[in-house]
Image (tube, rainbow, N blue to C red; front, side, top):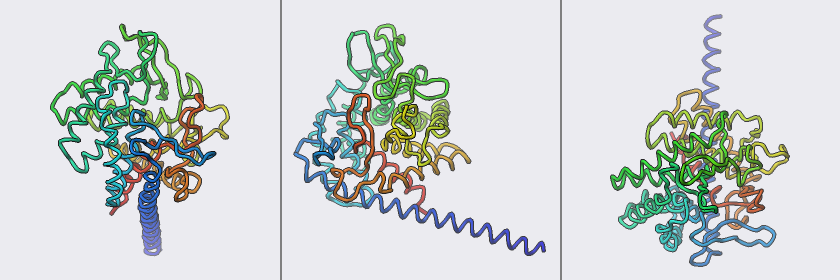
Length: 397
């Protein structure tokens, strides 16, 4: 009987391992297909874009692509996505298009009027320099970091996000955590520690003032520019000042994962885990793990979903899992896998040649502002493709 029981246990364990291996292989097949599909879908844009226009969104009512100039905060995501896809597929047309569109983007290295130079320049030229290092790319990135640094106020301890009146208002949004990666790169590239110090100071000030006791974050903090005192805690794109705007929670998570990667300071790892706990244990996180546009939206479960919040969340979790032990790492991977599987479904993924060329449907830019509501967005695509590349690395034998 003991022998039979032992054989039964061995057989059960073997079947379980086979099931996991089979599931892993199937998921890898899905990821590979998604990257291949995306590489085809992203050839649609170049047929519609003029020489200096960037894809921004898509108007289904008029079947027209919504575009921007290079100064729009999302301008770096299109070339960045092309470069990720080129890296995986080696399709020369993707690299050629990325190099073409980065030419009109390059002048933004001197743009001191925006805090989004990380999004604009590091997602584009940062990826380009990673794949094909060059003196030109390096200098563009250094100049971009210098421009971003001019928006830092040492009295406040933050990089200014939005210019506003009155003059003493100093607005900082949680999104700004995403632009710090450029500064860390600049210190590594130049040896100038001032970039590093700005990034750390900004992150510390944000950690102190942007987060509630439950580790949800405010969208906007209004500091006094001369004293550094907090004047207001509010929202711009969320449901209410005290609500948890979904993409903002994902921005914060991703930002503190980067902070830990770049500094190895465990307080940032703890912060990232706390934010992840808030998101993943939230009773209003749907079963498919694609967040509602705001975790406190009044019309849940009928509230709009935000695929961009899901994409950023998945990508952040897939990096965060590297820095934690089981069972946390397993949970983070499982949630990211669920997000990827659901974004790959027809509910969120567009059919070839449709959706203006975008991969994903159903993102929300600013519902209160009635801007980019339930539409495709470039950053949803960018972080989805980034999540796919990160998941592929985990799954590959």
